[in-house]
Every structure is written in structure tokens, then in C-alpha cells.
Length: 64
Image 1 (spheres, rainbow, N blue to C red):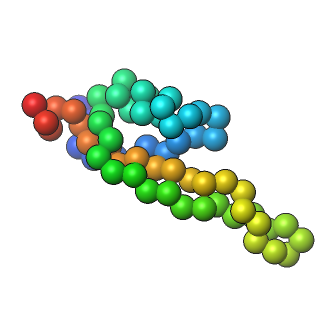
Image 2: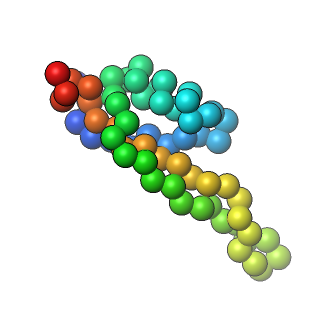
């Protein structure tokens, strides 16, 4: 049995839907979401790179 609660991050090469499907395949259901910007330094200045999206996931068995 896995952990009751974990965080899944949407990988750079997958869609939100693919991440949710991966989570469901592992036996988890999304219970929360958080986003934060990711920056990189370009010529000494912070430059927006992408949005980091994570889902708080709970084991499906917890709801049965």
C-alpha cells in the first residue's frame, strides 16, 4: 500500500489530463492543486520559464 497523501507534479512533457490519468492509475485521486512560476536567470535577470503545477493526491481507498 502506498502513502495516504502524496504530491504529483505535471511533468514538462505531459498534459494535466495525462498527469491525472497517471495519478488514477496509481490509485490516487486529486484533492488539491497548487501552481507556482519557475524562473531562470538570463543575462542576470530572472525570466519566466514555465508554470509548475502540482496535485495533492489521496489514496482512493480512503473514500470507500
